[in-house]
Image 1 (cartoon, each protein chain N blue to C red):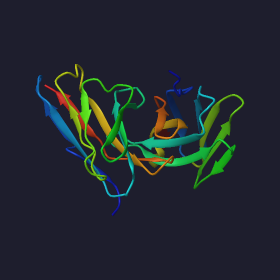
Image 2 (image 1 turned 180 degrees about the vertical axis):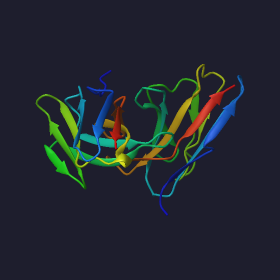
Image 3 (image 1 turned 60 degrees about the vertical axis):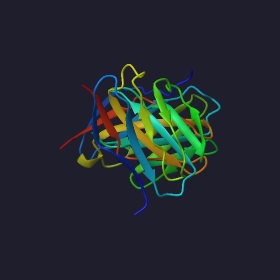
Length: 111
Length: 111
């Protein structure tokens, strides 16, 4: 089955820790994205990547880092510099200027 | 920056009735628009899209209307069913890899 997967579904982090969220797609899409969703708000773009080994900051990149070593994978690291990391994180991919396909999301909670 | 917004945060309809969810956008350069459905704890699912050279597009039980003059987008769902209960987002895209999401409208279908 083609699709986009995220893991883990739930993640708990202690203050001061870095954590990495996984995102994998087998849709052969060039572009991948990371969004953050907070209750009652729209999705906000953290980072996006149009091609392997290239990525761009979105609107709220501070405290986050990404890598794009493979076309299929776009992991997101939430660093200790992110002051309010508790949120629902969504990864998406797209082919050119078309609809973005979303993964099931990872809910991150800081303890 | 310019953001997509929604007129109503919640909408409650009777099963079998038609639903209309509205969205206002502010970027006149946006060329591509999408409606997504998001169920609790899940990633958004694509419903229907429309490009700026069209003013109406129909899918299965859904219709999207675009009024560029007043920068308004609407989603019509025919014969609303309990399974349609979810949060619906509109999104606009003024350029490749740039998609802006509204906060969403929660649709509740009463049996």
